[in-house]
Image 1 (cartoon, rainbow, N blue to C red):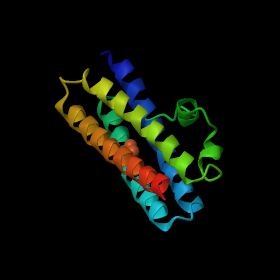
Image 2: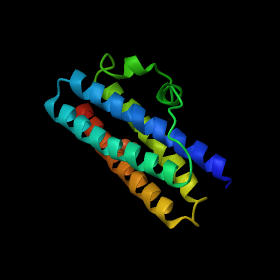
Image 3: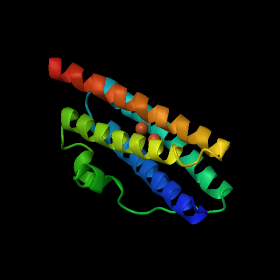
Image 4: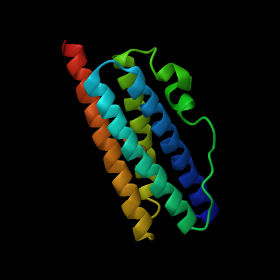
Length: 148
Ligand SMILES: [Fe+2]
Ligand SMILES: [Fe+2]
């Protein structure tokens, strides 16, 4: 992969992760379910780690971290503000699962193309697995709410 293509892809992840920090933090503050609220705050901490590790990788390969602008809204088909509170917990969880699955798909796609860079390979795997854990937790919580 050309280096400028790689930097553009990493900046897409950087922007997505940054928006997820803001989104999950806002959702955490807006939700009344204490367990869901605490989990969202904790997941936002993990997403901040992804922001930081993407920024570090972008710099290491010679680029500059750049915020691309609205990344989340096109993925879930809803405005960012709508995703923070007005949705109710079940729609919120569904939207978050859509986001996490998109991130997982794109991390997997990029992983297949960076086998010659062990450091980046390791970081992408770390992030991919965290997104997988987030998806599993969101799906489990959604099922719990549906069973009530
Ligand atoms: Fe993430
Ligand atoms: Fe995540």
